[in-house]
Amino acid sequence: MSVVELFFVAVGLSADAFAVALADGLNLQKRRRAVLIAFMFGLFQAIMPIIGFTLGSGLAKYISAFDHFLALGVLGFIGGKMIVESLRELFDKDDEFVPQTKELSFGAVLMQAAATAVDALMVGVSFAAIRVAIAPAAVFIGAVTFVLSLLGALGGRKLGLRLGARAELAGGIVLAIIGIKTFLEHLSGGI
Image (cartoon, rainbow, N blue to C red; front, side, top):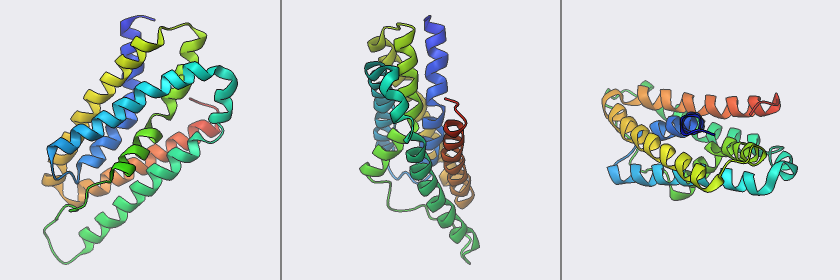
């Protein structure tokens, strides 16, 4: 696999992580938290192909039997919560939007990182089939995801400060859609 092909795979895999990081960034109080979010997303995007590669296609079909439920549950719940909170803000009598003072917990970021990296597991299985050198490929995928997630989290922070509850509503809808998309793709047999 060429570096260009691997780059496109990495960007494709990190698209969901970017969107989730963008939504997470809406309520960031400190920029250094964006680094944690990006690191966790990049780490999981690097680890999952290695796991998929190691397990091979024999066990991956059992894991893929429930991974879409994880993505739907985690992203749907967090997205739904953001939608409800933003609607409360939009319909509140106050015109001023005040971002949440409580950022996502480490556990919530960890669950998001796992949920957005589900597809990377299956990519790891396909890498085993075509004999890709998994260590450098995984590091590359993780690095691309880190950079894009960091840009997403920082961009979400700026959007959240400028657009207020409307940006949080849009972020919640995006998270819910990603969860539903992942669920439906896996039900229909897509990766």
